[in-house]
Length: 506
Image 1 (spheres, helix red, strand yellow):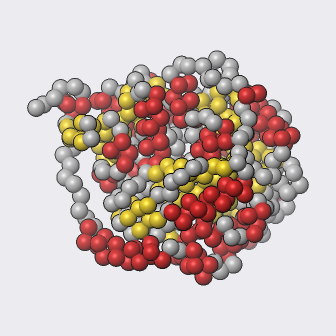
Image 2 (tube, rainbow, N blue to C red):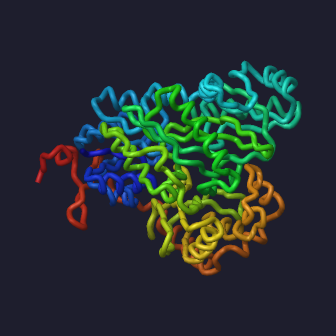
Image 3 (cartoon, rainbow, N blue to C red):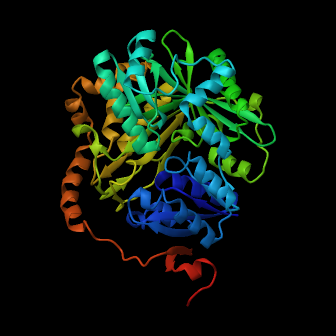
């Protein structure tokens, strides 16, 4: 089978590796700015799909399907982001005679609506945060707040990743917050509808990994703690959560499976919950795709979620039994972003002038860049994920500290200093986490502490690299319409449409 990966960066590299281990060929797609990126070089075939803007490349459904047709791909894996949770694209893939590697399109559509997903949870008896249906305007949001009390959270119906979310603590903030939530919902999800929830103060963000097949197998693989967030965007995850004991794990797992059974779920997915300080948990949403943080579950449960997704989509039964899925050890993940923590986490595009990754026992780096890679402004700024496993949480954090001393990226600013700083925060060390903790720490004036956590050698190299970047800007390899790059041993050749279809013009 030849599988097209409709994505870029570290997740594309991750999925290409999964394909190769299963004996499948992989097809990468790329925009003009990504022509020499690692996911392009790692794949068996690579197809240019357009210029840098995502709407003209990675969101161009026609171009992606044409790439699949031209290379003879039989399946499409969307990764996460871009078109991963777009039911229309999933249907288009299937109607084109290709295998969609993910949940059924109807399930994606149903659970993609936060309000519909909440209704499913209610029907099967899973607790939900008090909330509303889609609201006609700010006045209705005020009426909801008068019923449940402030603070409330306004959320885009199709939202995710922190987009389209606004906390409202007083009546005077409702009008602007509603307008912003609606605007972001329209811009990011083509849906300006907004609903409201009662805000649970200082909750933990706990999510449960699920996996199902078409033969009735449906299991959960424990929970992940995703409470360390900056403006609702996750930056650090771990498995398992220190706040979840065996009894609570069983209850969370059964709640997640109840929601999944109700909609006929299959493939990989994540059911997300808020865990209140009181110990109560509430259903939040379902992500109908592979999560960014899936490696920590893989490390603790000894599975390969990417491979299992592919095998399930191709008709295999899942080789999993709930009673055999037992957590072993502790894993943590740092999301390494091209953002400058010293300057309000502003994007940090540029050229990576040098790159040293950590190695050794229990250390895994899923990376979408290499030395010399150009990091553009056009996409999500995630560069890599540093994943560390050890026998327990204290040892995992000690191993993480060691790994961070070996991880150096020069030429651009990254969030690596943030994680070096976090390791010395008492609340973090103790596992006393909540979704607002990181924003609270950053609001206390963290610049001096972050400066101390920056690697001096990297800072010096970044200054030198800035001059090099100025000279390199605007230099791009020539392109000639539709291109395919095919691996030849350790080298590559560029070919046109005819060669991609097996007719070598030479």
